[in-house]
Length: 256
Image 1 (tube, rainbow, N blue to C red):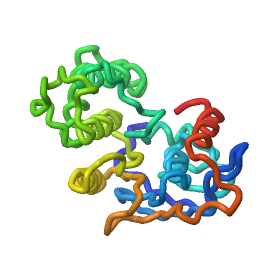
Image 2: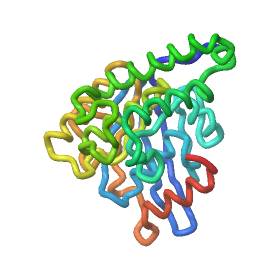
Image 3: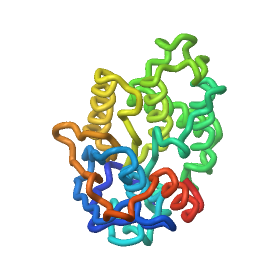
């Protein structure tokens, strides 16, 4: 079977995640076509990151159902993980500040060659596979709007020396190497100026326009996005720390 292309439709009804300390969120619904830009809107701690992880197959939902592409949640979380990717999620996709941009990209290309290819792809000559991996990286970097030559030391620039927007673009580029049908991006408001935030939304819209379904966490959804609000998603007295609930749920799935 060939690799599926194009964005994944996301249709969810009554989603909820509950852990030992209570509900992270519940009663969440969304209906978005392939290639949509979905904005998960709400204040920090309202369960918005947990919802992002649930829709990308990284958290097991407690109640409700969802169709992501041709797969169903909660039963097919592994299948959803295979065609989705994450960027800019603290504790999940953290960049190594000691590594350079080029080292991050080469590492991701190597991982893609070893673990991301189909069985047929693994049987191709090594040189052909290396060239394909290089092309994936170049395409991902361009799609993320990361100008390597504009960095202080080009690809040899350490992550610790990147501006926040550049680091976010790198995280997106790394996620795009796998050519996901569904891309999840966490808190795009985090310590960014209004102008930088506008640049991020323009980037995510361009990815959606190119066919990838994008789910982005934010405090306020932009005009034109499919909005999902977590502001009133939990019952009074059951809400808890999202960071703690995220850790619990990720531990239950056994992987990020």
